[in-house]
Image (cartoon, rainbow, N blue to C red):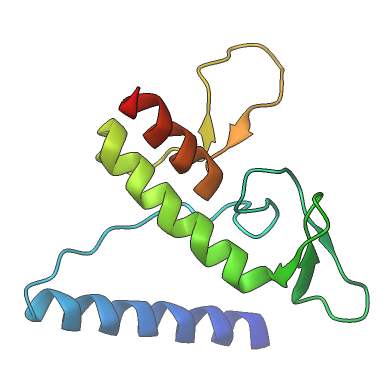
Length: 121
């Protein structure tokens, strides 16, 4: 029952914010948040979460950041990646058109930077 109430509250908050932003003339876009806090925003790979403080994550490069900060960078990167490649449904989570069972690279802020560098050449 608690989870059901929590999800209802979350949905209601999202609905109110979307309606208010639309009234002000803004455009609301939805981005898939899957795996955003599981991957480092610099593109170095999967992060390891601290056992004592779950909101703290350690990148493979050794840097430590807040997991929510990392997720927000990756969500913003996914939005701009979708805008740049023209995906109007904002559905892309992974980069690659692989049909095999190989792992694909998740869209992170590092992916956006490499896309920018490749377009500038």
